[in-house]
Image (cartoon, rainbow, N blue to C red; front, side):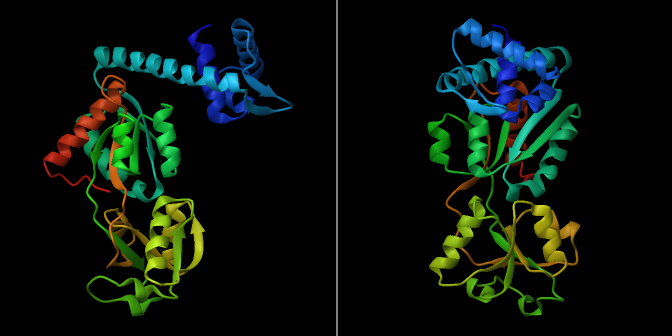
Length: 304
């Protein structure tokens, strides 16, 4: 058994396809398949359900996979530690964000980049549940989303809470002049207004659905997607109004849109930046986490 075989196994889990896993591993598909079969022979276990295509892992494969994730994570952390000792803070940081948090992420990364210009970033947009799973499986180094803080403590994550700036409605005043004005909008003011919202699988959408339902207000959702970019475009052309957490960069990007605060109870989950516990976090993620914590303590504009 060697580390490459375990990396191939982890890549197969992520890609769910032999060809894509081979590409991610920078080997040919026959080489990847042969190395994984050698691993199975060495362990004396069948790890992968094979038909014409990848068909998931066996129960034994899932157990081996959990160990492989840990070993690969430690191996990659060691490589990063060595690189940071030789060259300082540099490399690629893997960040997972939920869609409603991703728009202001560049603001945070710009502040970090000013201090660590050799850091690169790879960002994946995930649901809240997928984000926790990715943190647990070490497929992302940093998570930014909405979490139950008690759950994070139970899982021994390091978490830095991020300020909740409330929720706002964004709309084009030409198409929705009735929403223009000052002060916060009541939930009732959006009765029968066409809305562009995230899909119901997303935590922020479930949060909205619950509070509107409790207020007896019917949501008229005419456009659903997991893409924040598509939601913004829909609001720009007047297809509907966008409801989003306050604190993003949309006002500067879309000056033609107006925004008003929405009078709604705060989310039960806490916006937070999360990494693994001390000693298990990669050096890059720990540097990133500590720098964000410093910026927040100094009151700099790093927010969701």
